[in-house]
Length: 226
Image (cartoon, rainbow, N blue to C red; front, top):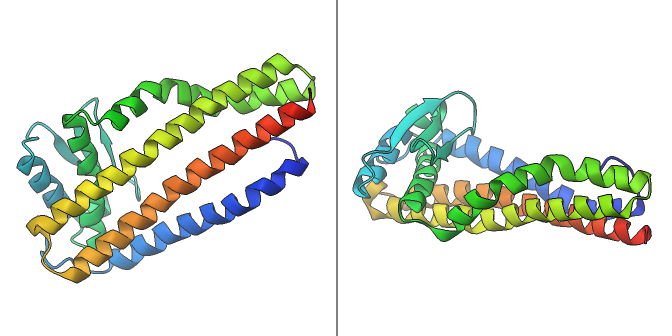
């Protein structure tokens, strides 16, 4: 929020969780990026093998710049992997590549939460950018209708985060199933992949809780203007 008030204390626990989650995902990524996977296959190879196994021959796999910039774009059916993941043969590389392909599989099978997330994305984007300024103006000038608009918009952003949770958890579940099905040969690789993906999942949980607490703050502040 753009101003300090007594409700800010509600943010402290989720801020601590968010910092912990970010730290965890980075430390796990760095740790397992140094460990060569037992199958000696790159992230690009992992992605291609899983895609082909699921009949997704039309989905492309390409490298992109940056660190942890990996994503799947359903509009162009492309799995984009950061260069370290694309070319790397580490446990981190195969874990992240398998996770992103999990999203491609979701798209192919019309996974309902993924479709819902895509549908509400425009509203969530507006809510994320416009809700706070509108709410702040309403709070500053005691304009209840602006406060209500800000809350409604931000509720859309929270809905997006809530729907994102099953999407990400399911993509990781699909990734682990594929890795367990012959792509890796040691229990150490499996445990490492779990640690990488679980740490990433925690960041989504933290983001959802952060959005929930912000919405709660807005509702409490709205009540103070009644």
